[in-house]
Length: 488
Image (cartoon, rainbow, N blue to C red; front, side, top):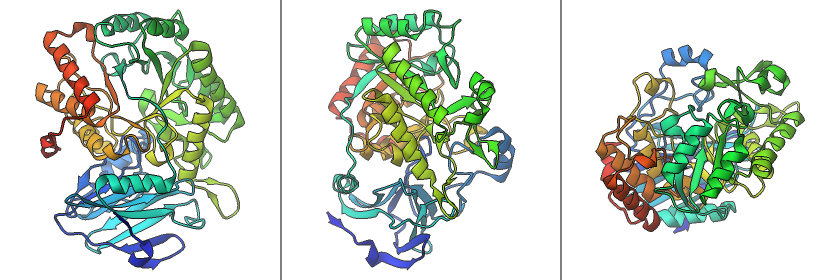
């Protein structure tokens, strides 16, 4: 393994970018890390294309915020063969030899890598604020060697260490019941899980428990006993208790938006519409002291009063979509703001376990215990034609499998990887048995969380045997069949 001096590769440099001489052959493989958790991040060849969102879908989706989940609203996609971009890190792979470029600091702006195969050049840009000028340095290192050698060297150079969490198996309520959960359904699922899960496993209550997104208290009709009672039920079975929330988001119809419009993040004087979930939602202004006090109280209640062990924090990208003006000539970058938002969460949660989701990965390194490294799994293989074209951050089992595999190197270095749930059930799902098996094996081999969203109480002997097989793969990491790559 060797470290490459970037100065030997520079073709040109300005106060806003560095251009490196970096050629590839048609047989080489390139990887560009996507903007956030859900952005597809797979190896490509130099003749492939990152397809841009078509103008019709970009324009038609603007009022609904469909382009706000990813980088489409601030990055111009070239839409040409051999032109790619990515955030925080990228690599070229020739056989088993990797040439890895990695940022050692995103707090001075996201590091964006643009590659043009025809021009044989790699352009490195710091998304540094309104001036888009570097503060002092790129903070980028380059290593060449085996997979483990280059990723170990990058994280050592960054000074980033994985938090001391342990891998977890368990259950999530989302992908079967979705937001139609109640105290009764949680009790039913707990009973079903008791036939499969073991003490120390995770039971996670997902979206649907709250009054509204932004109003983080138990829905009085759906959970009349309150969330503390649910935690006590979960703990009584020996499981860790997890709870989903989107702390930096507020649904348009939430009480928070009605009562505290001054808490919303604004761009050009208007609240920032961060996406179309829950009938539309806004991002919160993390610089508002009242927002900070409010969220601290939310986490104090979740961990201290209710007794949860883990929080799944979702849609975190909404905290930092735009640079902010701090002075006359220079502002805080998106990356810097996102890093600060993650620091707040770590401080508010204390030693409580954090599962990050919907978050740009670089700012989450070393700050969350677990992190989603792909898009949401889908109940079908690839989602609908419409959904595949409105943005890149779609729900897709096909995309999820590729993300899980190609971001595998982050596991145990940046955090513990969450590949999302797998499925064994035969009802309320359109995946074939072969697709379910492929997905489950990849989750088990390359993830540190192994969760399902099935009603485990309905598992027959065959399903129980398969669950235990996936659990063995997960513990031993001995599944090495890579034939699934040909389907992606």
